[in-house]
Length: 295
Image 1 (cartoon, rainbow, N blue to C red):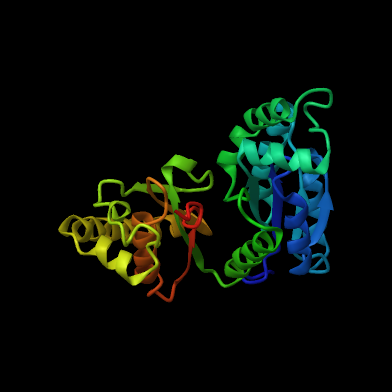
Image 2: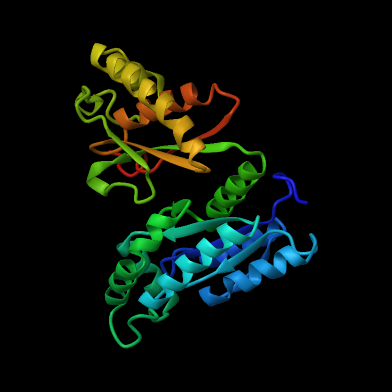
């Protein structure tokens, strides 16, 4: 009988066309996963049965599934429920996403046609696909926004995620962002720090980011900052164990200010240090928009 440490893992890779599924497959192959592309959802239970009957000869498996028709959702839902009831295999969905603008640009650069708009504009197909995949995204155990990720960074993030799963760690990603550039589409929690005093209006601080000591100290010196951080940490220390209890392997915390350069960066850096002090979580801090505005 398999122990919890040796239970085979089944990963379903899906998401928006052009969001990086090929990179995801390559990343999991590097981790020793057996990968299959474009498997119909109705065949997933048969595949799970094959894995269990292999007596360990077939280990971790990744299936790439593009769900572009509503009938596929019913098949996938029934297949996952059947696996949960009848097999010991651990199953999760990895959903890759990107903003519409980025996806359009990628299609233009590759000169490929979108599969849902073979005769039309890529944006038309992207919007149709996003609507069809809306429910599936809600089922995903991990959503990765690849909009600003280079292939090497996406690969690193995927490998890190599945390595953490093997170690039973919860991965916490704290990312700063600017509201004027849009909310991160893979965030689980969003906190708005635009109520804090803004270093942008201090001339000698404006060119720097919240990672520099001068800006960091400016953001941190206000009583409202300290009160906010006390309440926020209390909330996160309450929520994170509950996310872990529910089986989530990753939590993405977005910290936003107007431009994503000063206040949100400083707060994200602080949270990264505080949350990273625990040995039970792996914390990663990133700054999506800190370098957008050099002026």
